[in-house]
Image (cartoon, rainbow over all chains, first blue to last red; front, side, top):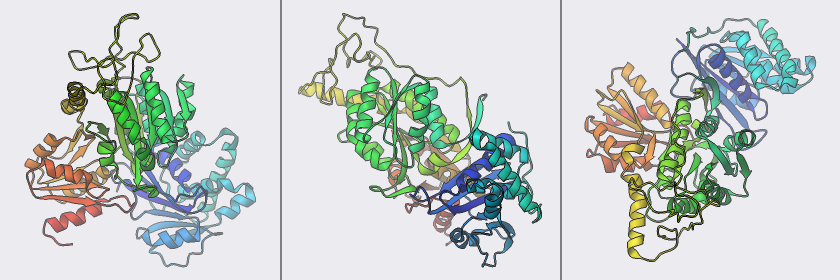
Length: 193
Length: 380
């Protein structure tokens, strides 16, 4: 199976769309894979439910949305309640410990991590919450290399904030390592033509 | 194709295509889901010596690019449904005065302000008939971002070639979706403005066609004085009530596009050679249709897709020929049947069905499969 799908959900302003773009760019530009990223969002600038879809594949991607994700990330209780039922059986559900209590019995592995609290405590700026989350996703899935994500973060973020973002990425990877790795495997990598 | 590999959204692919084609002037009023086009051009166009103006509304935006185009610039504006409605009067003016310009409409759900962030393809007929009076128009679309880039360049090329507004009719999914795009450094043909060879001091007739039907332009405010009007006009550009002048002008405005439709029509065939079932789609819907084709082929169904990149002038002949070889035609679109009605005009079979959504939700291969099961007698 050469296709893995991700859905990142949360509240507008938490950066779930940015996280999906960074991971998509890492796969598409630095790993020679195909990636398609889309989103659903409300008319508000902040607040409101936000959902970002990402498909990473060795094959061409036609339908650009995700129906049942291999990996679902929920950063608010609202998004957890709404999207937990769509996860693919046997998938991976990552939630934030401060905002989400995992009341449902999902047919998936649920990993609840104190991403927000850790970022607040160790970095002090919660704006990099999303990149910490991306570190968790990276560590738990191994979907792309860390170097690819670092390159994507570097190209996307302002230089003044780069150090903070890379620290958040490392924090997330460390957090997730305590929870275990290798839940799903990366698509087979091919040389892009 | 050599060039720079990028991971960008459709709106940025429009910007890249426009800059490649030589965009020199952009005026617009930002609106979801087209805003990124304005945002990116505000930054990039002035750096290349071009002009970016944020106007007070969409009426002024289109009027502004018409003026700039007449002075010799390649021009564009971008909007969505509500703004596109406001632009209709000036689109008619650009049709009548034969002013090259590119109007991007990244469609969202309507009517009125509708669902601002949700996808739709409900402006297909507005692109064709939104402005009043008999006229012809060119409208292009694309389903993937490499094609968005190249169709944007085509839009500029056709605007210059046929001296007409060209509508680039995208949708929210294509506009906001990110995927790989190769931005080539060179190699794609770009049509430059056909400028008159009439020297200063000699009378220039702005609406006197050459033998090949084309009308060379002279930069307005330059060496020639001439009139531009939305009224029926003679070869000097001055208003006329002469029925012969009126007849010839309208005939010219329609024929210059309808009789060249073989040059303008762009379609892509996917697995049509042995297909019993023909899907016809365009824009982001065509991605779901193509997904359905690949899925159907995996389970032994002989199904293919005709993807339309030119919506207007409508490719009646290509649709007719594709449908003649198949038993069943399904039109896949996100409106209540705007292209479906054109397909029914084109084909002789009654077995034409519509697969659609108009609730702001992106149409999926599952939506197509459900209708397919019903029409094939397999039930729901």
